[in-house]
Length: 125
Image 1 (cartoon, one colour):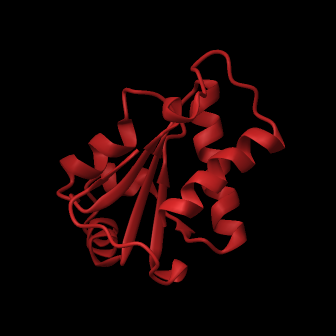
Image 2 (cartoon, rainbow, N blue to C red):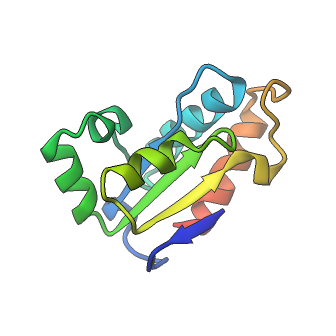
């Protein structure tokens, strides 16, 4: 996990946009489910990574104006991170799930694994 740019913690969660990998692997599903759970818990608002990747101006503009941006990636390929960077978004918090010992192809999607990711994300926001 790393903070790219000059991220600040402790800001209002309502000003946080959460992006996740939603890849076909188990860790992609875990990233997606954790992002949805964070949004339900009020730690931020899940936002559309496809809109940013598709270079839709309103999505990029809104992301650039967010107080905090959190990208959750399932595996080391880090598609969410790359999409944000390629869209000119440089100031964001990044969590890649292998840093939490979630291994592609060997990770069960359980309430415990989702809570594990959510707990780490809530520390970062």
